[in-house]
Image (cartoon, rainbow, N blue to C red; front, side, top):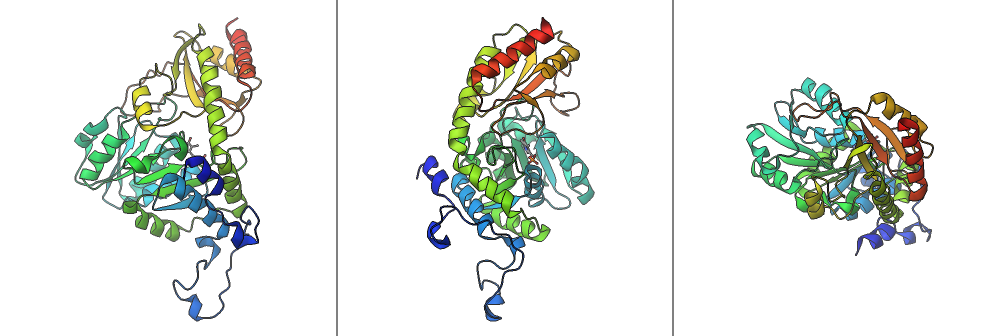
Length: 383
Ligand SMILES: *Cc1c(COP(=O)(O)O)cnc(C)c1O
């Protein structure tokens, strides 16, 4: 089955719910058993709502088909998906390598929680590829990748990293939120734990928090055990919003991509704009890897103002925007902008911290209106 067909049909079985197209939103804790014998392990599919119900099952099955995974589990936010995935593959005395361009709260988790449990954390330059092997220690158990990287959109050679990691028996994780399983299929090129902040494009409407973790055969048992032991559970209304968002993911992403190319095509020619950070652009340093490993580009990108632009001018630009909201997160139908704080965001790769950079999420508005909005804001900031 092709992806669009999977999106329409995966994870639902109308015949088992009186023919209704969508599965019910099951509000539950207790599940009843017909007799004591059935209460034994394996006696019936659902045993207690913390372990899943027909609503969570639908979304897990749908994402499993899209990711080509051995199994999928849900988390109550993208960050919760990141932390559960990492916890499932480390133990005291282990060493984990994390990309220097990881989403900042991922670094915060790694720096504050992992050392408390005796897990050693090092960051690596995303440009490394197969040479990441030079950073391996005898106790390296996992490599955490993210592409494109947060804020600076650096690509990395994940198939090469995965090959190197597997040679020493390490698990490979990837935060694949930017591309979603529609534009990138990490498990197909060796990733063991593919993470989505479902809050972004899967939910797609800025109205719920969600995370998904898809596991390869090698990583599934540990993930399943850890997830059950921790007691993570997502409320059924939020799971339903994820399921509902998923049905239109393909058409939304296609339009996000179209609008982003339109807006950036204009933005790159503006005199105050020095650099566009978007691997879909053929001028981007990560473009070749993007073309090889991804089948599309989503709506999140950044640009740097020309040298000499003050933070004050950049702030005037941001404050003047009318259609772009100022706010964290992204992946909804609406356009957003934030100032990028590069200072202190990297520990092993050099970065010009004096750059004035802005992150944009290009939404589903008409790109001509978005361009007009950016244009009037540039006028206000620079005259
Ligand atoms: C937003 C985001 C997350 C975290 O998702 P939340 O649902 O906000 O916790 C993780 N990774 C990336 C790349 C993100 O952009």
